[in-house]
Image 1 (cartoon, rainbow, N blue to C red):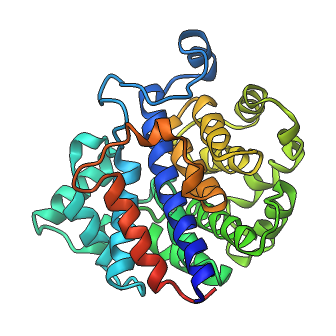
Image 2: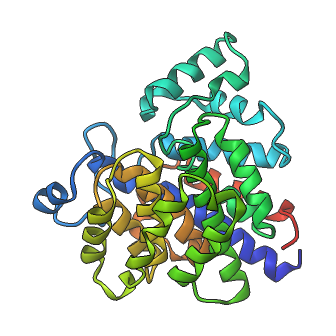
Length: 325
């Protein structure tokens, strides 16, 4: 990979990973609230605030799983069976808010009670999609490989077809966003949706119909951010179910004029706000890059042992080893 392209890859990887983190932290304080409740009590979530559970800028399980994916890629980007499960288990901090089935499996794995493949659950949730976007950027030279890797990575924790479809959709969307940036092309919502729906890994899955439901919303870029959030909330249920929350995140990301806008719309749509913000951030960050992250967000994003600077350093390392674009 030549120097200019490697620099672009590094910025897109860091942008995807850090914007995923930012969306997670921005959305966590309002997780579970309806759009109308957010509007009534908060107005519009635009800056990092403390929540009931966490100080401002704290990430949750979404980002912690993403860190595990980055670590596994850095160790062996063939992602052999069990490697992701080992990284997930080693990083597991239950206070970050894991789902009950994934948390129980991670506890048992750390105790040596179950093999890595037993982590996978028949859940239709978005747990396999929420941290996957940077993987799509890393393998973005080959959409078929992105889909294959995302499918395998998702099965580490979720093997329901809806969950797998969600992970593949987010990873492939992030890959297309990165490819658009590398080639200097605009990220156009309808074009990306058409390319996603043409992929064999998505067109015959439970994710195809929800993605197709985004097409009538392709005029979203002309709306205000609040109107976009309302349109998405009116078209999908803002829940942890992948076939509902993934299209919200993709719609927010593809209709945005900036990284900030993408994350804010996904968060303010309500429901699973942290995960929607994480997925939208991971996609939009791949296109806009790390330099587009608001300084006010970066200033409060946690920066401990596996925080902001650690994630940026991982992205730099991965850019140097990424497959040639």
